[in-house]
Length: 176
Image 1 (cartoon, rainbow, N blue to C red):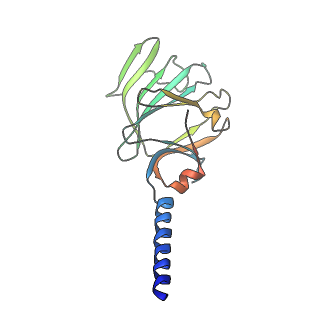
Image 2: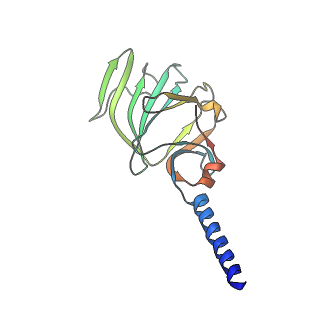
Image 3: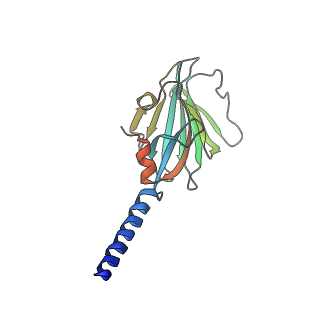
């Protein structure tokens, strides 16, 4: 009788330990949107190393789209590799830096071969012109507006991190 009770307690402890591992051990790599400068997860997009994504925003002065293209690095840094825009203006580069290429094609300026590496990025959802978008997928086939997930004017710290099931349940998964 005492032996059966020890076995049941042992099984219960093992099950609790397995449940805790499943719940709290990070397993899913994601692009995480942290609210401002906190550890509060507002939303996340599951990604893998070498996945690409874009952040598109409407420039508040000349009201045309600016496309910033990024890739998730193996060490979970974020690398900006291209920027595309239609007009020169405040905050827009007028030429490429050393090692970069500047091209005009299809009515847009492209600066490629960028090597801007970020461990994290601060991003603001537009307030005056709130049309920011997130694009992802093998062929950039997925698109959502920031306003579907965030208030206009809100700002976030973006990082690529592994999330546990518990952390995933606290944020909103971004999907089409």
